[in-house]
Length: 385
Image (tube, rainbow, N blue to C red; front, top):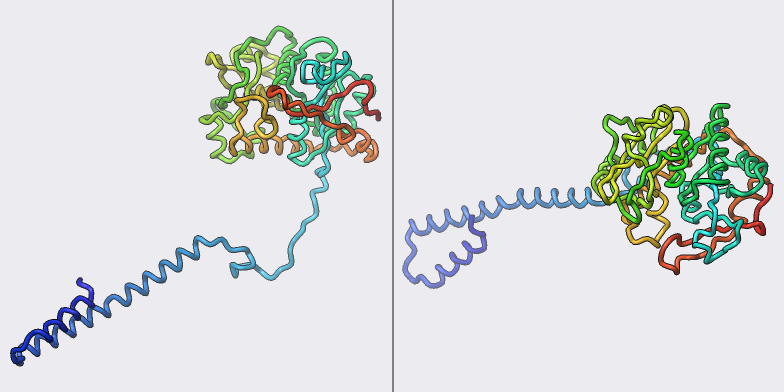
């Protein structure tokens, strides 16, 4: 259909240049053409109106309106329901310190020094909990009394697998089981070395671990076949992020020991206590168990580092993407949500006196490797009950 303006222009030009008389037939033809052009011009109007409405609708749909602007908000007053009385919304997590200073003696070479990497503290705090350090070489009565001030425990990464440290981990683990058996929901999260120590303790075999090449590597998770993630650490993950865990390198592995699924399945004690949630592969493509959860206790263990994605920068292969940071947050949220279920209600003053806020972290990230910050404890700065 030619534009109306083109027809009108051509008609005008013809009248100006044609000097011959206009016959009745010519006049009739000209009149008919003029009416047709005008009719065609009016046909555009409904189309333009319809197009205008569609554009207006598209703009409206792309605009995010606040509830007060949408016209659908009711006039009722805001609702602020009472908090669930069964939950504790001021949870405190006990984190066990590890021998040394976290920097091969460069920060503190005292023989009784121990440390907690600040990333573990931030990990817990980011999910809405506070931290009390469980200093591994404190007198046993002080250490175990601190368990009465917290609502869950975290075992960190590290290297110590024998001596006093092993004995303390074993003792705390038994106390955690006792608390749960007595009716208190008291969770434990074990990371890397913590995973390895629990494997040794539960299997009753200090030689059960195998060698793996998984130092400073980003990796994926492979979920166990037919696994039901309901009630596990992965339950709250959105489906898209669960899928990315299996395809994208969103987790940080940094260990030299672990346990294969085959050896795990051969040990009756391990199978009776834990179920395997995920496996992963090292640089030689050797498969190891990477996530387990207890069948009858709120105990979860990782042979990888969920805390590093958001809070450590010294190792080159730590993933820092938005998806990787979300992995950190979902796991921290799960752990602290479990701690909120604890029935423990310790005296406020004793909690305040023992919080990690009573200590100052030391920056050690200039070395370019290892931890960015650590809390160091020695005989001069131990907190007492």
